[in-house]
Length: 303
Image 1 (cartoon, rainbow, N blue to C red):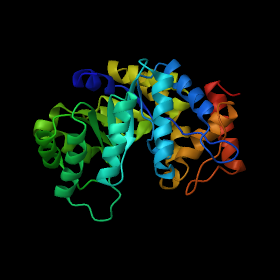
Image 2: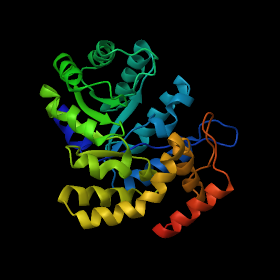
Image 3: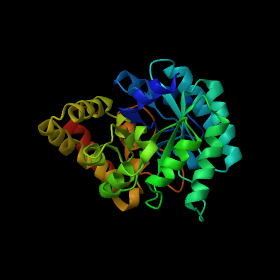
Image 4: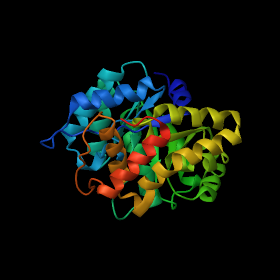
């Protein structure tokens, strides 16, 4: 897929599918196919296997490859596939090349988890990965407020296949500053990386897409929010935001400790997959499950 087409696709809802597990704790590939069908049938145009909501850091390298294989097979040409990669530079490059062979059009590079990240080293890290897969679109997953517009501009000069930024710093003012100071990187697609809860504020400052874990459960709701944001229909944006807020607030509470558990609980109640998650995540307690029941009822999609 040409980079301009990838860029166009990213300006929308970027779904991050969960990775279902079976009763033995192994990948449940048939359930993953059901999740993916739910997402794409609901009108989502971009799917990101091996994102954080997919429990990327709890998967083995082989499991991450299986997730990519199932996604490319199940989704085919119905949506753009952007695979999550990360870890050491060699591991990220190997995963990126595997995703390319499997049929992905882009990769999302997870924020480096190394405890000592310099701005120059951040540029070098992403440049090395992007240069290894020049035909793939590369999206940066940016969670650190220390990376500024000048760093992005420098990377843009060095790696022209870097096409987007998933901005996940919970500070819209900082986002506005970074986006406006990015210079040559001004042509990036800016993706609001904190999902529907933050999308309206980030769209006001230049974002044109947002990530979504909600899209696993109720993709039509995410698509409706996107349409309202695109058309500037603030009344509808506010109404949908209020409808979505209890679910996304549950995911965000406690430093997002239940980010994945809330989504999987909703899917379990809908009969799509099991609620199981891997440590360091944990399934919801009974009170949490009851809250999810009430939310699904407000959406009129309860199982």
